Amino acid sequence: MNYRIFPKTGEKVSLLGFGCMRLPASGDDSEKIDEAEAIRMIRHAIDKGVNYVDTAYVYHGGKSEVVLGKALKDGYREKVFVADKLPVLSVKSREEAPKLLDEQLRRLDTSHIDMYLLHNVFKKTWETVKTFKLLDMLEEKRALGLIKHIGFSYHGDGLPFFKEVIDAFPWDFCQIQLNYMDAEFQAGVKGLKYAASKGIPVVIMEPLKGGKLTDAIPQSIQKYWDGIDVKRSPADWAFRWVADFPEVLTILSGMSTFAQVEENIGILSAADANALTDEERAIIGKVADEYNKLTPYSCTACKYCLPCPVKINIPNLIGMRNEATIFESTEKVAFSIRNFVRPMPSACVACKQCEEKCPQHLPIADIMAESAAMFECNNR
Image (cartoon, rainbow, N blue to C red; front, side, top):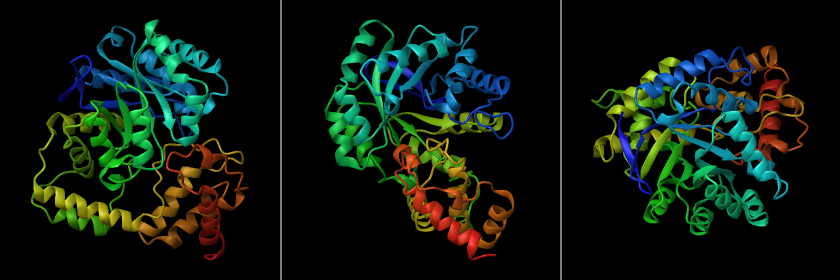
């Protein structure tokens, strides 16, 4: 496993971080984690050198922290940096925040959290942080030894606001979404470099865009991969693009299968900074342009939008909407939605609770209306 240095302490951090947002599930319910398999995967990754594990209060309906805590028994806790996040959207008063931290410590069954982040920072949550003086609270908890390093995960609108947040506090680290499709999305590459210029190491989330860069490859994309002499899997190309930036501290991957753990360990044990050739960077740039041209809605299937009050599986339907365009398969998608998907997109009541929680700031109610028109009516 390759490692990079955490500047504040000089400690080595594995280039691959284990994200616990997409742990293997028992059946179709993501809240029912296959605990035995998840624990096996996490421990195997640690045995192979991964020493950064990331979870959050809301992942898997609150079950992710519990399962991670179980995985870190038997001496594994001492081998890793544990990253967890304060769910700022859930904080309605100054008194709630420390109670949430206490609950997270109980779920993880640990005395402290190494890397503690303000979760999902955008303008609304940033106002909550300032109103309730949550950074002061985190400083108090750090003085008590309950957390070690303070950071934030960014889902805000663009680079200027990211810089505002970066400049507001002496952060130990931060976390941003970055992949070759999203080089200019939210903080983007410029945000990565700005944070680094301030001495703030950056953790990367969504390097594979929730699997969108690996699950099914359109023909117009595959021709680019086939046209270069170097042969790599789509995951390998995506990870190496992120790893190429020396400013990156670690790259989180939400792994759902043991095979993904093995593959990702292999890739990020070989990847390094400034290792891509000019030709390789050019091909990745062309692939990114093609994907961005094809994809109507930049959903990562993070599931922050769930649960829906009328039980619509929002990420699934947005994925199907994108699939219809990317693979020119409107009729097939329409057939699947009409026959197998319940509730259908027309069930949306446009309450927009999901839009408030969406890190990508997608117009979900409009997408549901558009999908209903495309798949439920025009193709009958």
